[in-house]
Length: 130
Image 1: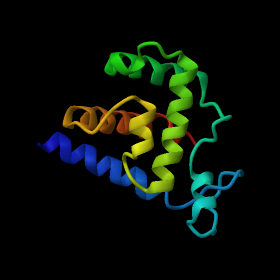
Image 2 (image 1 turned 180 degrees about the vertical axis):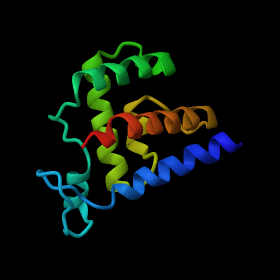
Image 3 (image 1 turned 90 degrees about the vertical axis):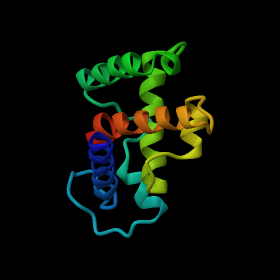
């Protein structure tokens, strides 16, 4: 139970940090938090994290979610992570329906648990790289 509370607290902290857009120079922007600001908060689909960070993320994703990773290239896993960062920032939510579709997960409790854990990993390893 304590582990879940810590995970939720970490997720809340990450989502709260996403409310302040970061400009391309790395400083805080005074822009309002609207749809255009949400796009600035997440890695863009064309951006790439440090190759070591990306490799570590992919390795952990494959280890933790083998069924979801099956049939996906490393590049697809990274692209899905970037898309998930954008979705979470835009919705200000830990998971979104589009993330469930992206990963082929439905509405069952087991699938939602898996999706939640994918979101936590992605927030910790990819979304914070900007």
